[in-house]
Length: 308
Image (cartoon, rainbow, N blue to C red; front, top):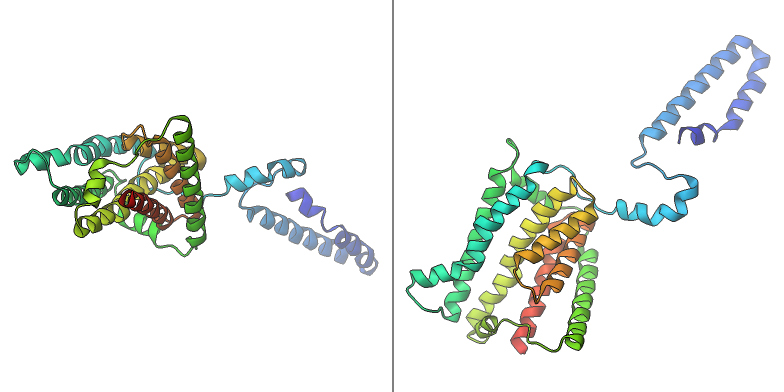
């Protein structure tokens, strides 16, 4: 960079020598020294303004696409958690909050109500309450494990309210997601055989009453995406990307997101959802994009289950 700047002004040095030498040698020397000083300051200023190192000229063609991908994310590396504590925090959330509330919570509700099984309305209301409790306790855990003096509220607010435009990336991400999910579903039906992928309990809730349908859409299109995007993109993906390449962080957080659902049948589609929402989040820097994609995807799945 410094050599290219110095070589970009050869005529200025030549002109200084020609005219100034006839007037007086000391004047010529002073002007030449001042010109060299200005040129050195300009060179160092140009060098210090570079935000990323430029590849050698021979590698520009081959590495331009790779450089574009490496500079893709707009996430800040500053996170309110220590890098060594990330997986311990997630393990605490997963085993202490997620598993008991998401997979054993309804059994506890049934025992408290002294019922062998819950009706559709009680099931969906209880699930809404359990999901809200999980999100609230997860935020409390993230604040408790944060670096002393760091508050997570402004951190997450900065991930939602942003000046960057995210609508285009959201529309593109949702279109890509539905294309990939549809393709995998068609291939699965062709090579594995057709299978009803909708939960019978979910279909029962959707066919119960308009109130249960509304609560079900509210649960799967608002509460669930809000909770999962906060944990898996807002916390896990952001924290991992501060200490590794963003592409690795997207893949790892998507694997964790997939594993958290404990569903082998839907693992491929869940992984695709995690990758697309993670990519949208990295491109925009806002959870609004990933939340919208996640919410729209769940809405489509619920609608298809409703009309099936």
